[in-house]
Image (cartoon, rainbow, N blue to C red; front, side, top):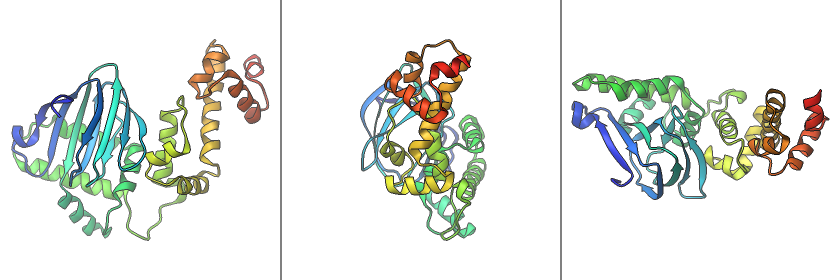
Length: 279
């Protein structure tokens, strides 16, 4: 991996930690065909610098998301990943490995049993400010000795399990479904892209059929209609707050042509974009 990253900190080597592996990396701006081997631990990745379009494949089709500072990602244990990305500037990240044993002991104490790591990854992708700040904190820590690391690992494991997982048979409130929140986050993140249901389903580790069923039950709308509504709402803001012509607004909102925007806008609002702006 030397041609892709340069490690600037390793808690095992620099601090003598045994209970938690924390690393900081500088990444090259672009990479092709980067193979990330499977790891047994729970792997948290926090971008802290740079921006890039990241494409990932894990046993299926390629999925895409934007690398942004603060956008957490959780790597699923025992799952290798192929990755490629393009950015304009070098990227930086803090990465934390929580030992699998720590997570499973915490799950047993919480009565969770088998951990749904894919569901946890989808939930984390929707955002968690506490985990983000905790990862930043351990990434900047200079405590010598393993007590700090052991305590941090236990806290991270318990919080992830409590906030982003649940015992089998215990159903979260429908509108709090983690994968629905993650799907909405993907829509907002990639609003200007030609996003398909398959793309969204891959990001939240669901089949297209399951995504449509769960999403519709939680929101009262199909994913396609919800995404179109988000795009129309963005177009409305741009029509009111900027002087951009419709031809410029359309691609910013995910519409291939001004005509496609106008048709969808009329269907959702009863007005053409030009009439909406003039009103």
